[in-house]
Length: 379
Image 1: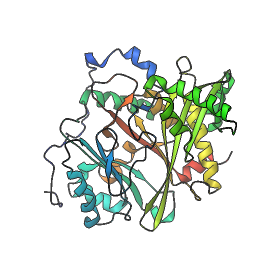
Image 2 (image 1 turned 45 degrees about the vertical axis):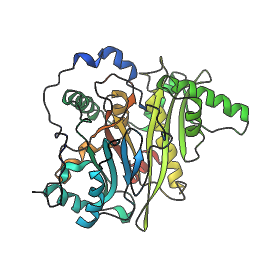
Image 3 (image 1 turned 30 degrees about the horizontal axis):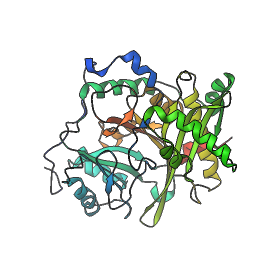
């Protein structure tokens, strides 16, 4: 019996391991390979921010109620009930509730042992950040209604994709950047020029890159010109052929401040995939984040954690995260008695490889400050 005062009637079943069978309506696997380097949510209102609302939770894109608990570190049942109360959302227009909070590590184990770990979807430890957060983790709490359930066969394929990625040995930034540079690509951080015509030219190229996913000039301009975003690009023959975005955010957690960066919205032009370009772009972002952080230039301080919510259906994205030395949340759940955690089920729709469900299942992968500096802060 749960120690909390309620349970949900429409639980999605725990993700189970089993034999993978690709459904016929999943589409041609060979065709889907064209999109392994894409990680782009379908355009919806509010897309220019992946972090979303803070507290209290608010409606977000993709029929979600979303929020980050800012009242302090969650350490007891009172705080937990404050969070869990929002999981009981009854709005018919909301099919998923996704909440994040910084939770004391020992209390996470208590939650798991008392039967409420089913609402914990993923855990990102904050060890190696600031002292105030050393014994804590960012926890994703979530609940989907009955018509927003993952397909077991697809989840098993995504686990296979992740298993393949986990066998990869991380590489240094120099190794990652060397390959595309040898092929004539220039990897850099997009510095928008003062000249308006040059700025417009860059906007035109980035809009062209993302057009296949339904993004228009207005949506791209919001992302490109947002001061808290860092844009990594790859160019060849003076044309932008790949781009990725790092969204910086500062989150109040009680009297402390959490600084995090999400690597998101990445795309590579046809004909330039499988050349290490996407990996190089996001690696350049990590180098830039480390440099800015060491200079205390992430909202006037140092970053605590860099993460990405990786599309399980995009093998290139999973491989890149591992190459860069990021840890997947699937790797840490067992430490808290939650070995099946590490997946955000049916979180958002992402353009790319075929699937039978309306939304994609994501795997958070992170790198905390100490490891970020170790791998990317020496350049």
